[in-house]
Image 1 (cartoon, one colour):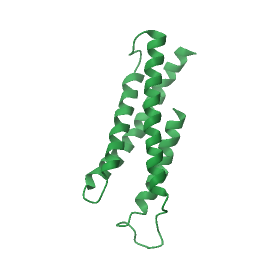
Image 2 (tube, rainbow, N blue to C red):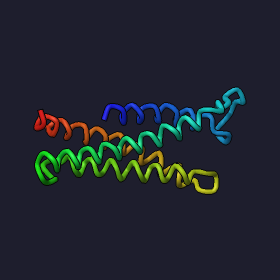
Image 3 (cartoon, rainbow, N blue to C red):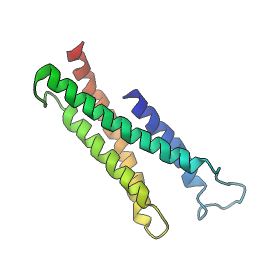
Length: 133
């Protein structure tokens, strides 16, 4: 989970850099976008999606192996919500271009929701981890 949150924070930082160096936002030509920034943002995003899916599979397999069924706490719906928001955010990122301004708005909005979803899944996961220990 820590790696996913770290990836989220790196995405927030690199995303802010992408946002503030957009060509239509630049008031001063001194704010040039580094050529590597977009690829780092995309690569980190792909990594976060893979980490979230890995956490989902570990959680499902571990819970089924330990308890035989799912749904012991709010952690499952919180985790599924994180997965859905992450996947839709990743999809919306692939749609961002000047002809689709809604995609950037959707992507940024979902990432704000994802922050609170990560908090919820972390808080609910604490009780789940205590059951295993």
